Image (tube, rainbow, N blue to C red; front, side, top):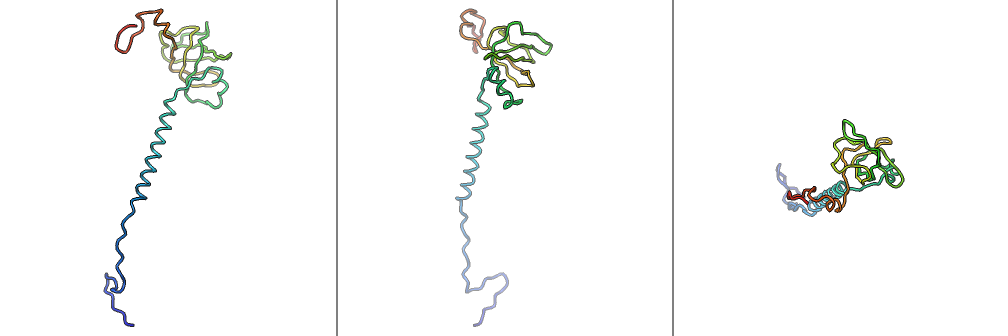
Length: 160
């Protein structure tokens, strides 16, 4: 058997030249699909996690103190009479709910409707046996508008 000499850079004639394989796009599409689904799932979970505002009454917040740590949440309760003390930074007061009470130190101005014996929501976190708040939300019903006509401004500027 004689072999044909092979020149450098050429293939022997007896061996077929393999055709270039077409790249499979399936793997690429699958990878892109998995990445998109993962990104979408992440955004949904992250968005819902920050969009859901839960309100913990004082008694539940105190019972969940360990699991809450220093995470920000909304504390709900009734402002105890005689507990409101103005401070240079804002106001200190005590909230109560479910037979428990908790001291709240708020930095910033309380809303105009803030007073004793009304339900409020304080936004902040627990720090030891105190709730550190930077915002107070006053809960009121439509009876406020009925009892005080003309004091509440609608988004369009009209008075209710």
